[in-house]
View 1 (cartoon, rainbow, N blue to C red):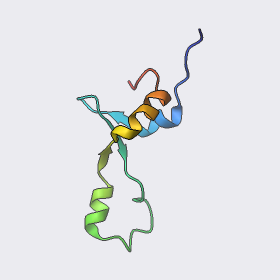
View 2 (view 1 turned 45 degrees about the horizontal axis):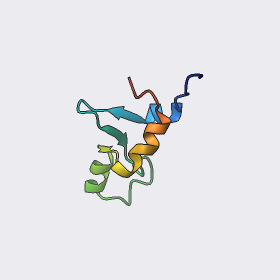
View 3 (view 1 turned 90 degrees about the vertical axis):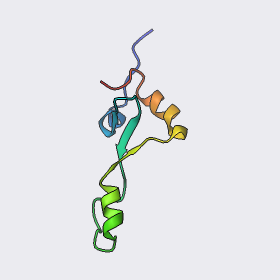
Length: 67
């Protein structure tokens, strides 16, 4: 059986923590920042942990995990 391919878009967007959780950058923090308040912008700059409901989809995209 041939090797499975890693989805490179997913590999570039996610990172594994020391405890094995996957983190990603939040959306909506790149432009149109004038109408967003400071608290919201600070929160958007922080990494977010992947939700459990999305984990199975990520596992299919990264069959060999992340290095």
